[in-house]
Image (cartoon, rainbow, N blue to C red; front, top):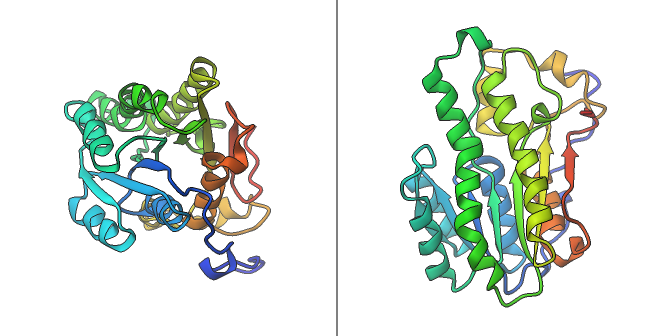
Amino acid sequence: MSGMSWTPTPEDLPAPASRMKGRAILVTGAARGIGAAIARTFAAEGAQVALLDSDTEGIEALAREIGGFSIPCDLALSDGIDEAVNVAVARVGHLDGLVNAAGVYSKGAVTDIDPAEWRRVLQVNLTAPFLLCRAAIPHMRAAPGPSATILNISSGVGLSPYAERACYATSKGGLITLGKVLAMELAPKIRVNTICPGLIDTPMVAAMSQHNDLTPTLQKYALRRLGLPDEIAQAALFLCSATGSFVTGITMSVDGGRTYH
């Protein structure tokens, strides 16, 4: 696309250090996309990472790559979420953080949405993070470090909804609000923040682009391009490591200049 700005490669991003050394983190939606990028980045920075996803093959492959632990769990079903958190704690020894990166996309006008679709999207994108937080909080309160963290991956659509995105926008807007409430309830031991990505080069966005020309949307972005999962991972690293130790309750837009307000 003409006018495209420079797009970084992973080699252009900061080299691994040890900002997550000794921390144990549970990452959902870890088989691909943003969740996988966060898991890789945290592991490279020294964290023990438990990978949760319904894609068993995907998380097992990533676990072998980064030395993490795979925990198959279908977040479309509430049953099994508490057990998955308990398994994660048993495998990594304790729990310093939770990253709610799992999500599903849905498009449709309110009058066209099947109630079953509404329930599915709200379950994966909002109810499952609530249940995961509820199960993880006692373990994070007992963690040995001075500060534990919860990070929710929402969306710019949760801040500024589009038409025909009722399921998705409602679930992501609710996730933003849940993060703010948790930040107030869990301080000072647990910090809670939310990232709202713009369009990111993930399998979800690739599937969207098969049916929609993304060029008009990207023209609204100051940087005129898709973001990279690794760029979201770097923001997550700041919020979940000691470098972000004075940050809680925020909603950070990482969207290439497509400001949502």
